[in-house]
Image 1 (cartoon, rainbow, N blue to C red):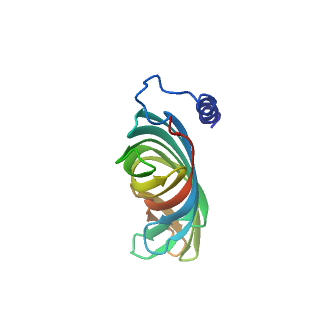
Image 2 (image 1 turned 90 degrees about the horizontal axis):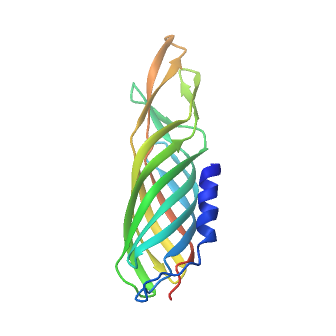
Image 3 (image 1 turned 60 degrees about the vertical axis):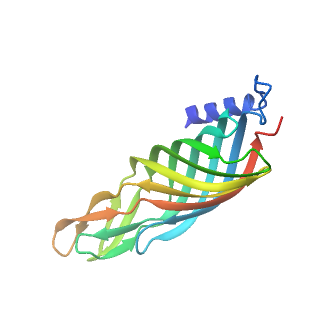
Length: 203
């Protein structure tokens, strides 16, 4: 986390740097700050909120690359090997993704599509409700991908992102049989977010 904070501070420090190319339309550095809703997939899951910090650099005016740092609070869905399902307790997960966005225009209204890939740090969880059992599942890390679309108007940004993360399979103790049972977690989630863009102003 210290390294991530250092990178963020460094990017903010050089945030006002101007492109050397006189044909540029936008300052090549900006930072997105957004809040929104996290909607996990699977029956029994419970939605929550998310917070996003994303410093970016414009390779060209319509193509930006960045680093998305996101915290999402939600209750993930899980299913037992017998087909029954429930949700975990509410907890926060984090993700660190390298991203890219393509903007269709260079006007004040700028629709975009984008995506990314990187590391999702999934929160620990307590599994309840199976034959009176209660099992603690440790935090895990998985690589995943993200697809998104949205728009910017001036310094306001809004978009939707689908975070595609493979399911996790853990084991929970079943007191009725004295055996461990497989528990499959649904990790993918949808993010709906709105926020502001700092920097990236027109030159």
